[in-house]
Amino acid sequence: MEGNMNLSLKVWRQSNKDTAGGFENYNLDSVSPDMSFLEMFDVLNEKLVVEGKEPIAFDHDCREGICGSCAMYINGRPHGPLKGVTTCQLHMRSFNDGDTIVVEPWRAKAFPVLKDLVVDRDAFDRIMSSGGFISVNTGNAQDANSLPVPKEAADDAFSAAACIACGACVAACKNASAMLFVSAKISQLALLPQGQAERSIRAEKMVAQMDAEGFGACTNTGACSAECPKEISMSNIARMNREYIGAKFSSTAV
Amino acid sequence: MSWFSQTLTSSIGKKLLMALTGLFLITFLVIHAGINAMIFYNDGGETFTHWGHFMGTNPIIRTLEIGLVAGFLIHIIDGLLLWKTNNDARPVNYAVNNPSANSTWYSRSMGLLGTLLLIFLVIHTAHFWIPNRSNQFATGEELNLYQMMLDLFKNIWVVLIYVAGCFSLYWHLLHGFASAFQTLGWNHVKYNRFVSLIGVTYSIVIPLLFALMPISIYFGWVQ
Image (cartoon, rainbow over all chains, first blue to last red; front, side, top):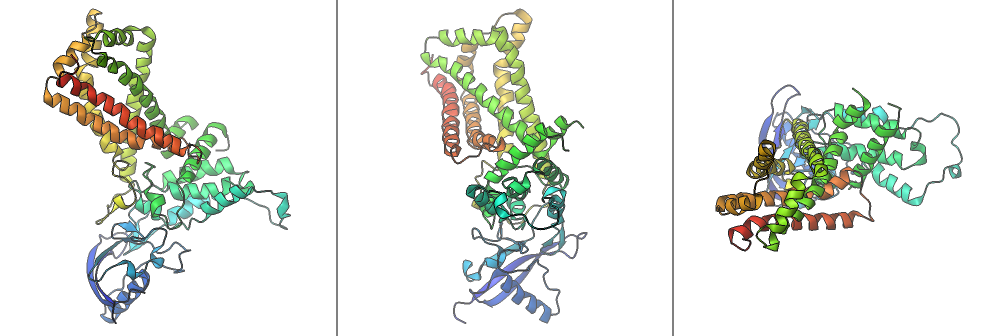
């Protein structure tokens, strides 16, 4: 079809956690500019299956930008060249005919590569289970008006809660730091009345788990926020620092 | 580990130490630049030597100097520890990376700029502070720092090293000043622009003032 593109792809292939990987080159003809980046990978995988080759493993689920699965480091940037989108929301019209596109997995000690472009992001789950929750008794929900929430606090909490834990912040950061993720998760609860009971212990435990997982520290370059598909603000990292330092110097919970 | 050392060795604690010592060193640079700028009176070093004598002999200042050395050491050692932690967090690098799309090169190069500044610091203290204090300990007399400056900055290579040191300082401060406030949790829509304005102004004025000293002496503007 007219307007379709011929592309060269350089994709990271690795059979499992313990073997060394390397780049493989693929040529893909007649790519529609209306395809999403993941659909382009589907076409490539179908071609590989027909040729009797192993298809490329990559994480994907919702394909509408809300699950955070589609981790791909495209031409040197997480989720490719666009701002505020995930890989599934990136379309081939962002590329030109004849382009060479390099696709790598997230690179971080805390995110080991499982296969090809799939990395193990359980480190995020372990940080969440260390304190990213509130403890509430079961039973009837209480009357909403008994917990007044200022509009500004609700908005800030909602902006922080938009984090989909995709790991682009870690991937973009020169230190592979998870501070934007952890700070968003600490903030969304620290800003709301329901989060107050475990506020100190949460900050202390989540930061301790983040360090134990082997993520780096923050240099405030702002790369995380610039590459975040949900555009989470760096002000959350400042809030996390206040929460953590405040908790460490005043709370006796941990 | 006590809660205190646990806090200071955590990722945020290490950053807290960097921010606090960084801001402390920033205040030191104001005093250092201010007193050295006395050479611009161009009075044969009289005003400069008067204040240099005060800074070099006043017991309160000399006691505070121990804190200054500690501040430098903590900032340097903690910086190296952070560099190690951050380097270890990504054992395999990207084959293709485009970080200039999301951050400034100097914000990503604080370790490199800091290392250049450390090298400069060794050269600079070997020129003035170490010989002067050694002489004070040995004989009780101060050296003529003004004359030492005039002699040293006749050499174009020394002048160039000092100017290069000032450039490193400029980029280090350009990121470090505002970054310290962010680390301390001071991120607020009412103050962010103010902090960044002061930070940029400071990062230009202080290194420029320092750079003008060897340049002015080399060209004979200050005699």
